[in-house]
Length: 199
Image 1 (cartoon, rainbow, N blue to C red):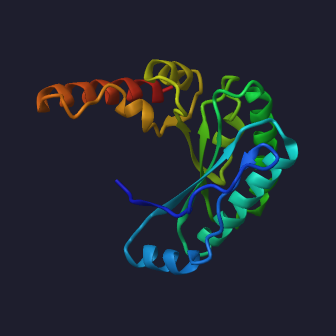
Image 2 (cartoon, one colour; image 1 turned 135 degrees about the horizontal axis):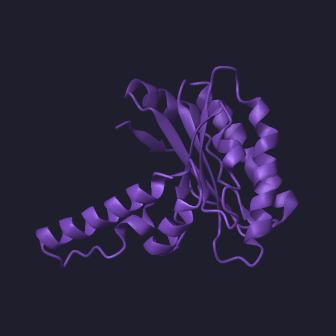
């Protein structure tokens, strides 16, 4: 188990179909503290709400700019440009996203690696080129609002992609459950997500 630190300060207002991350003026100081505490990597989220090439380019550029800053401190950044699952042009947005990420991978310093946390794609194995890229440590899937069954089914279609579910993981859990009921629901969820990640 390795620790990750969420470093973003939330989302800016939407522009060109995306929500960029708000400025992080104190990031270097935060990263220095993270290194001192033995943190392995970082997480930062932005959002894509439309297949707008200009907006997606800006989104990915910002993510990689901050990632280079994080890599400079010896940490592994998780780049997370989340595509909203309900948009009508989701597949087109994902094609643009894949191309933009590919453009920026050459900027990853030699000997360094990033991680990518991406919405489960509409087209199976769309992100396989990223999974196979030596500059990418892992491509992990976010459930993005899909039910657990839907998320697991989609994940199983994407070889080499592993789960990083939160909403789908906690589905069905309740404070009103007994400890035994809670543990049973959670164990079942973990088992199903693990199996979907094995492809």
